[in-house]
Image 1 (cartoon, rainbow, N blue to C red):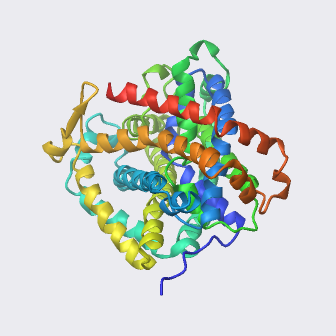
Image 2: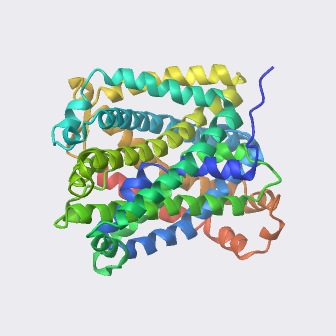
Length: 467
């Protein structure tokens, strides 16, 4: 007998778990820098527009697909299309994508563990040196930390939906929010922080461009875990009595709030401790900023709070980022596990063990991709640049595929499942949806504006990265 798939115990449990999957490195690091480089509040306005009018409808559609089918992405596309093999292939892409993104996220989370260990042993000054990151990520000792992390992740997933994923989210998400608010409050009291606040919140429309608009949509889409099957899977664990639009709105607000407050933390900190910083020189890469730039900022805090105080603040920040990465990683890994349970009719324990083996198989070469192995470090080349195995995984699955999967969700809901099918599912738990402005907008946009925008983003990303 196959064990029960599981279900979230409450609407709050779903909201915290979905927010945990959405809040990640992009919110805490990439968003503040993208905002600062692209007009501050002007970027924020565009970002919020895309959240409300592009991402929110797609989130509702994905969650509705999951709840209606009570299946993972493969099963959801197959069931709701009447067994179409072509749409089942689309569902497989929505499983492959989170599986490979989990490889990318696992490696970065391993690096966070290493940095936390170094900080706790008093190594802030060492981490602020240019060569340190390259040395640490090429150390064979990373495999020990990889094993340590995978044991934590899969132990959580063995607990199932309520005992594992939901329990983790109920503890870490409020903790993350409190840590972020306290750290932001501390930074805002520092001399010079006002310059960072102005840079972040005063709109500068002269920096706006088509590239900025494309970046804002990409950031919004990726930040909310769209296009990677998470929300379809989480929707399958969602109670039929609960209100999908209302719960989705709460997840969106939580995710956007974390990104906004992260900006109030990072930009004022940068200006407070290095007033001469040129934000145009900051990398929009989460990896580059976290591991190469921010340790220098924290070290400069010793002028105000001493070396020990600066180290404590650095530990709090990296713990914050680790929590965000861990909740996202657990959410991402759950997607293929759900597929193994649904499609192969095996127990959660067996599915978790299968996924643990597969993830380890791909994570090992990814860990070796930054200097440990020349083969994986110089794995391939495209766009005129030599790329590592880690770069390939990041570029293809994290940067490129997500808007394509989002595009297929829109086309599927509008033209295969039909908007009438989508509406009939949403009104379960929200009878006021039918006839509302939101329904009218979704009926119009899911088959027209939104897929066109996502297709343009996909094409633009392919052109930028590979050509």
